[in-house]
Image 1 (cartoon, rainbow, N blue to C red):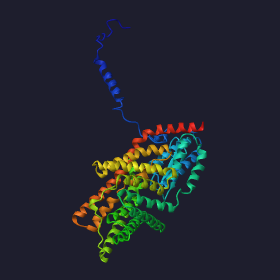
Image 2 (image 1 turned 90 degrees about the vertical axis):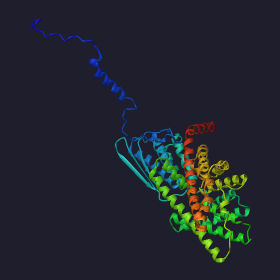
Image 3 (image 1 turned 120 degrees about the vertical axis):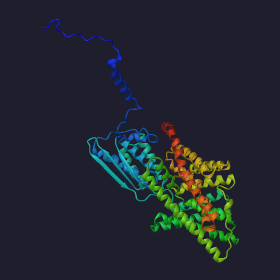
Length: 509
């Protein structure tokens, strides 16, 4: 035992101050700061559930009718989604629209995880079943043609799937029937529609009745010539070149007849004829798809589309330039002394306000026919084209430059077009693409080419180069403005869908 004297002396008592607790307190404070969102590291990136991709789209909040528990059910769901993607790509849809539709179908069919990769000509999908089995599907689409009626039918079917009105098992026969459906308009009606687009452009520019009729005829003949070249299997570049060349030569022949008083056609109206042909041949839908893909995060698909657009447009420009140079050389050789159009006094939409409105309505309706839209979409396309061209015309009259006027008008087009198209159970492109043709810079391209190929003076070359860049700026402004307007209108999707649902319920009762 130890006695009291053997015990070690007691440790002196010190006040409980923060001398010994300060490190612990400091550590606690550091941990508290690290828990704040501003300093905390983010979670690792993982595959998002398919429903998360549908935020901000018309297919948000899909109703899942069943859960996929077996490999066979997962395969059926992927086959249905792949068939939807194939029909949409073949009908001219852009990558964002295809992805949202595919994800909506997959979510409605019960798939919780899905990886999808879309290019211009192919779709690859992969999922993992609850048992861990990996399923991969791929489909290649080598040829696409605008068919907005078919695209609207697919959009309607996907909407019914997400609302739970159609069972996924019944949707596959329906999508197959949509794929086999005949096109809405025959090729002769499409050719007449192409001629009507040219005539509408000429009306908006202020052409007389004879020039409008000639523009209609030239547009039809150019479309038939383009179809003949396509049947030969030539690439799109040469198809565009042939179209521009034929349209320019036919307009020049009409100009010769007007010069010798066979028809009542002035030299200025010759430019209107060529401008109408250029607008009718411009790949407006492809331009819009390319810009939409690039802006919404599809760089590979968007870049491929942009390259295709530039090549096709360059082919059209080459054809028009070759036609202008050839006709000028022939006129000089034959001593025709044809007066060139007064390009310095030309302006976009130079007709009177009633003519501009009439031409815009005709362009929108005719462009809807060429894109194979449904019959009930013709009047809305005409009305939206009238609104868009009217806004651009008013802004131009107020002193805005051409690019700014086109961009602001395109924003209005995208906003209103998305609202109206959803009310009509169709994707926005069904209305926005035909209505945007009224803003296309056909006259600007012609004026620039006239200066570059016919005049060829130093000042003319500078003005022509500036004109070509301006035309390119208008094309980009229309495409990007339309996308912006559609994005701004996306919060209205839920309200529109709720109104449509209440309308359907009221009709059932």
